[in-house]
Length: 303
Image (cartoon, rainbow, N blue to C red; front, side, top):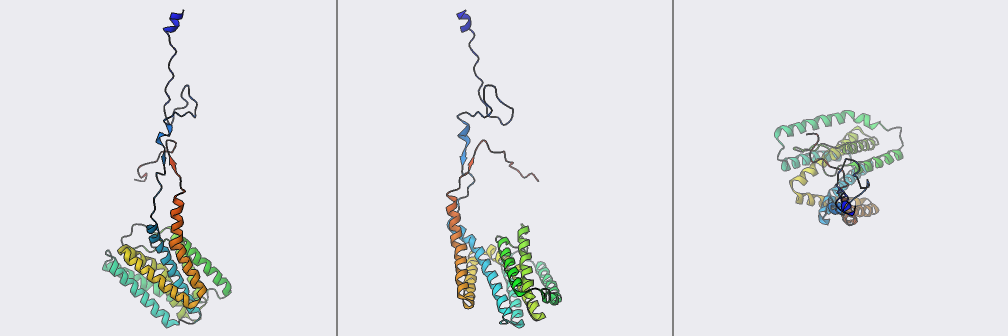
């Protein structure tokens, strides 16, 4: 009897296998894992290591556009105070338009003569439409109080800054592959409505036309011009940005010293403090990947 038991040993236990589907394996619980389960765990595989100087250079684009919007606000203020008249505004419009086309000619290799003529034709139709619609803009908000106009305008400008695409341009640059996003289009619309509200408080039709032309030139074409400068030469982009910051701070200082301090603090906060916070937060980022992650496609499903 003992010899018969020795000749029939008990069957060996089946080895556990790591399978995604197939149900429970005999002899093991449904949540069973062996000692090799955590060997495939990877920590912080997708965490991007950022450089402080590189992040600060990227943040300069935000500070640059903040200064552009502040300059637009200064022109609005001086126009409403009658410091700038129609002639000064028209000279400013022509200067901005000429310098913008000059920058495009010098920085864009793909800008052909046909494309330049196409731009000029669009500007002609755009300017003509603004001049025709100027009387409508002048009387559009006559029944609304000035306090309400200023409150809505400031809110729209903040919305414009919050949704603006600081990495590109709403107007498609020559050779650009990325189309404008929905948020950048909403941002542009907010700036246009704010410009209409400001123009509606001006007394003459020519002033309304001039301030609308100025505002739309800046909000439409300034991102395109700065994008072309940055793509052409990053060092030129830095020089232009710091020069623009200095000019903006000088104009704001002549207007109000408290606003100067607030703008200076905002520029330092955006350019220095925010990149520092981003770098410091990377130290506390903890990401783990392992066998429990869902499978990811390695190809574009739309192809």
